[in-house]
Image (tube, rainbow, N blue to C red; front, side):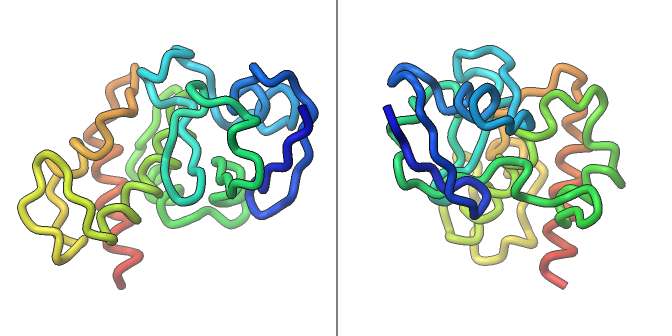
Amino acid sequence: MKTSLRINGEERQLDADVRTTLLDALRQHLGLTGSKKGCDHGQCGACTVIVNGRRINSCLTLACMHDGDEITTIEGIGTPDNLAPLQKAFVEHDGFQCGFCTPGQICSATAMLEEAKAGWPSFVSDDLDDIDTLSDEEIAERMSGNLCRCSAYPNIVAAIRESVKETAS
């Protein structure tokens, strides 16, 4: 099936079986290998991408379902020469060890911060009037769909907090 995807601001054409997941389309058909296949069951978050402003597990959705959608992968968030503030913070706070989960963590955190700015509550939300006051518990809850086998969670939370401060100033 022919599908038109807008990935990282660029129109891309895909001709693939209707059973092809968005993750497999990105990695195998379009050469965007930043998103990782961890569990292939939507449990680890390594495949997280942003579709129309919302984070999703790309292993759980079919590529053909996203005809015309705006998709952002880790390749669209920053470049090695021009890192996004969140990517810089991950480096500064050692928010990765093996790095396998990092693309999904960064895509998820990018969308999560937009969700918080929009006032979306989480299970532990006390006050959403000011994103700068997201507690460690709030960040951890909002990022709970992204697992890190190396257990770099404190560093990931610190990186997200640093990114929030840098973006606010």
